[in-house]
Length: 357
Image (tube, rainbow, N blue to C red; front, side, top):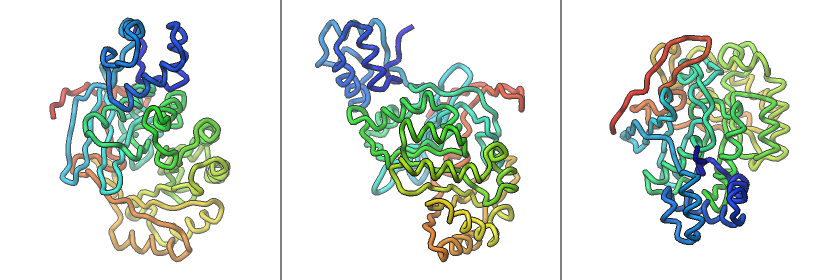
């Protein structure tokens, strides 16, 4: 089987070329051709020797996931459905703004964590994506949009910290000056709170960290974010403080989906103020994005403002996430893709649909 070079970071490419009897500097050359110039044809890599190009053609490929769906929202947001195997597809979302272009990428086909308000978790979990499938989302977005992606957020389908063996090399490529050259501050990994892997990410490749908090106390968080039963808030906050020792930003972003009548009362806001005294943080309040069968409603705008005001009066930094791409189900918590669910929750199989843009 040929090696997919899209999934090899600099160290992996150096090992690949060493096995081919080539010099390590070939890795730098090929990184630039693949990731900066978007090339998948080895014949076009003109600064490689003819022999090196022949070796690549014989033993390697540059292969991204297959695009089977391409939707554009009225606000310019673009969502791709990407086929990763015969039974599964994941979604990636491009969000253009005046000062930046953000790509939201997936790390798993489905998600095992089953957060109560998230569409992805309701379809079950099939498998981890490999590094090529993760980086391939960025590689495709660059080619398809023709613009530089300035920010990457791992907030798509899946829990990134449950797939760090593939995520860490992907992060290395995003940060590598010979590949995408992104700042650590502009690459954000989101987690629901997998505490041991937060420590591993801190030591291996600390980038900006967002924690899906969504509740100010253990009783409510146990209900909304089930992994809290394994790693309660006390352990999560301690892990956040350890992460800050090496983080590129001096705060953790707490993501908080606003659910009408569930977690949006004044008392919940006051509990968050108390929690924030234990860790340097900012809050990103997210209007809930409905999906069929969720059982939740979005908090009203006045309730959201009152909630934010309590946090702000306590001196906390608060932002409210602007809903983007909700007309194509591309907003936070709505990504679904197509997954052949192999978890115990359900035995249904969801076939890949061939969707044409």
